[in-house]
Amino acid sequence: MGIFKSIKSLFLGEKSPEEKKENNIDKTKSNDKDIESKIKSKSKTSKEDNLKQEFLQKKPEPESDSNQELELKPKTDPEPETTSTLDKGLEKTKKSFFSKLSNLFVGRDKVDVDVLDELEEVLISSDVGVETTIEIINNIETRVSKEKYVGKIELNNILKEEISKIIVNENSNSNFNKSTIYSPYVVMVVGVNGAGKTTTIGKLAHAYKNQGKKVMLGASDTFRAAAINQLQVWADRVGVKLIKQQMGSDPASVAYDTLKAAKSQNVDIVIIDTAGRLHNKINLMNELSKIKRVMDKIIPESPHEVILVLDGSTGQNAFEQAKQFSSATDVNSLAITKLDGTAKGGVVLGISHQFKIPVKYIGIGEKIDDLKLFDPKSFVESFFR
Ligand code: GDP
Ligand code: GDP
Ligand code: MG
Image (cartoon, rainbow, N blue to C red):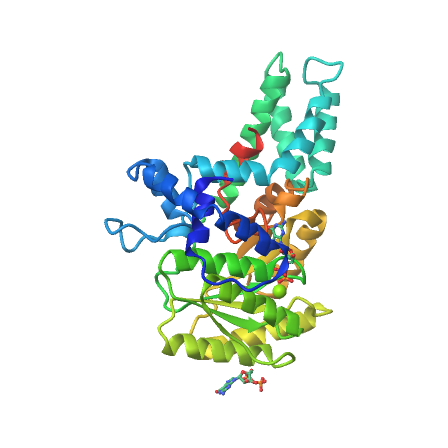
């Protein structure tokens, strides 16, 4: 783990005793002194440091542009620390993908129809999705047919280029952040139970807070007391305010209270948790649109951002959820979580290609700083490294 990943624990407030993820943070924290001195000894002027500051890290240095939107600018030039955490997060996916790829050439030395057929299978079994796989294979086929001899290394390069092409295209216009235009900027987080909503909210709150933003959370997942408590633990850990009511109360009413409080207390960023347990689409739609209607009453045009959280480790199921949710509510960004624990990371490629909604964040662990901006370019780089 990188030094800069650990530095964030320096900014953590008091922690509540809970769960195993706490242990990870504590482990990190015990190294703080060490880390602090290492950081001090590092040059502050390097490009690397600037980038580090930008994403999920320290508050901006005085000389930096006060209007910069730190963690929301996808990085086109990946910096080593993020890259290595990304590499680590994608380890399982890469391992599985490349061991399958290397099998393609057992007993063969050039790309032929059989190799392409098998490559198609590799992509599909790596959860890239059928539509995306077909497009990639077609493009590769066209290229390969023009060249006499394509071996293993060439195929790897072509594959990388073709994958980059389709996902970079789809995500090239990710300049959709308006968190500095609206104040408060209201984010609603949706997704099925267990997808990682609450965890993502905690990480996001931390990232925004590190930018110097005043953050407030709203516990509109009122389904279980534990859900509210879990968000409270994150709020305490990050050191932000949480607006909540009792379990079972109306989620829209919690959202109402939260936005009211946020408005009167000059909060910059409001993040609303929601329940994902509604057994059918109609209920889901009704509940989410009710929450939105109430929000809009207090802060017109809010929520400004609706993040759909998808569990990447569910592979094809994540595609299905993306379809369901995007038809039920106006999702305008995606977060794909749990990429660290799965070999199904290829799902990010398919989802970012097939949905018109950009993938904005990826979750690569349970810790507070394990949320990364999704940058298609560094994602593909990492994938092929
Ligand atoms: P919610 O029901 O959608 O709010 O989901 P939670 O935030 O409660 O997350 C469900 C479980 O997934 C928790 O145990 C989280 O710690 C875990 N989780 C969330 N994001 C990630 C991630 O990026 N990586 C890993 N390994 N676990 C995650
Ligand atoms: P419903 O369709 O009759 O449940 O009401 P709304 O959709 O207008 O609002 C949903 C919830 O948001 C309500 O149950 C209230 O808790 C809260 N809410 C909405 N508008 C107001 C308001 O003007 N004042 C207060 N105190 N709460 C409101
Ligand atoms: Mg939750």
